[in-house]
Amino acid sequence: MRRLFASDKRFRVFVIFFAALLGFIVRYPYLSFEAGFPVGDGGLFMEMIYAIKANGYLLPEYVNFNKTQIPFAYPPVGFYLALLSSKVFGISLLQSAQIVPVVLNLLTIAVFVLLAAELGIDRVELFLCSGVFSVVLQTYLWTVKGGGLSRSPGFLFTTMALYFFLSHLRRGKRLYLFLSAVAFGLAAASHLEWGLLCMASLIVFVLFFGRYKNVQDFYALAFFAGAAALVTVPWWGVVVSRFGLTPFLNAWNVAEMDASQFFEKFFAGSMFRITIFPAKDYLLPVFGLVGFISTLFSRERSLIPVWLLVTYLAAPKNSPISGLLPAAVLTAIGLRNIDRGARHLFRKINRRFSGDVQPGIGIIYFLFVLVFSIPVLFDKPVLRALTPVERAAMEYIAENTPDDARFIVLTLNDWHSADAAEWFPRLSQRQSLTTPQGLEWVSAAEFNKIVGQVAVLSQMARDEQAGIETGRLADFIESNFTDYDYVAIFAGHVEKEFGGFLDTDRFEVFYRKSDALILRRIPNSQ
View 1 (spheres, rainbow, N blue to C red):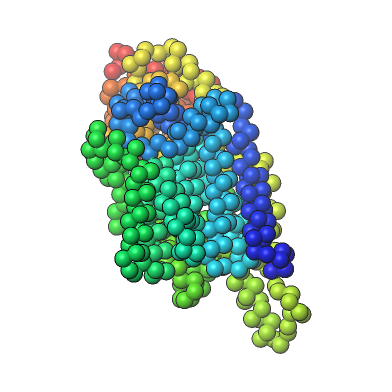
View 2: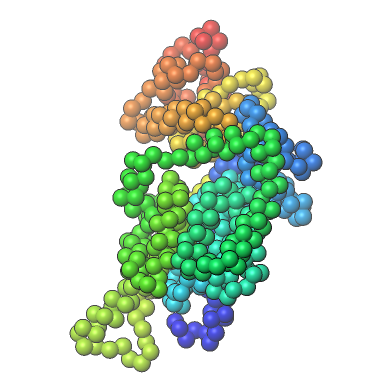
């Protein structure tokens, strides 16, 4: 493997091409979905994009989503990228929301290769970690969706900021420091959590390399902070001048994690739980743990496991995604240790590998993983867009219900994956009482209340679909909600008897297709 190319530069180009090709194959289905509709969520962000456009491309004060006036405090870089792409390439905003997150995610793969190459790993490890990063589900699970309009640029600019900062530390060029500051600013102005993770990672790099010791070095850090502030101030400066810190404090209260959750995820090994499919990991977490242990006490490589630990401390709720950059490298190191173990074993039994031939068990194992997984990922993508039936049901609601109609929207998924519930306010232009998105900027208490209700409702819906416990939904909704007019259920092959609503005299079928059931609450029963 070391002889593949004569120069490191040419080898990096090869690895970038290899990883980007793998990533493109895995993500191609999300670019080719018919109807030009984004994968997964994105309804709130589409509302924000249209609000920016309607305001002459300036940040509006509020966005009206789900019949609520939400302070426009969300980091907007991704929205402007969608608007720019739509303008430049002549595509619709919906198509832009479908394509831009995927393209940015592919660019992140290329930058990751450059970043990993700065971490002192060998060629085999670079090849392996680039392949792992390009195909694991966590790299694209939340970034290629419509909601990835914020997450995907946040991920990309974080990776860029870290690469440029490491390049500055190793080569001492101020240009790299400036580029890192700009990228950090863009990361923070794209997605708050990625901005936080970028800052935490940069602090690790500064402390690990121990370079900032004199006045000139601190001037350099001040320059970095000033440049990043200039990049972000058009966003947060406007928000703070309008609303103060209240929207950010509300969002922080929603994102917080208590100590029990922190330690539960920590001891469950969530830092290493990267997978190819939702329930199939091909032992990648085991290799990640092996890589973590083998580098933790290595003087030359201890940066990588410490970096992983710090990202977990900064954002434990979204682990392993929050630590995906170091986790992919550690997984590759763990795979590489198979070769080192085999070499040690053969030496123990007095056998030698001839010449420069090295065992390539780690590469062979990973290639087998690719052979078994890539065709399935290409043919049966993990993520999906709203079905035509679901979109048609929402359009029917928009055309055939009063503007002030209030809905209980049910899906089989918890709130963060309930794509139909998230798109519902945008496509139907009606209020959903079970859609919390956007409320994190208004009221943490109201947001958390709806999240708790949706957790119960989605579990009941799954039980109903599986035939475990049936007929409970109607009574629960009647007991916990008062001021509503319709119940909209989005689930595969939903029957009109779903949830026991028609067993009462309080509901009637308003609309029904294979994946959608809309029930109207009979007025005299309210």
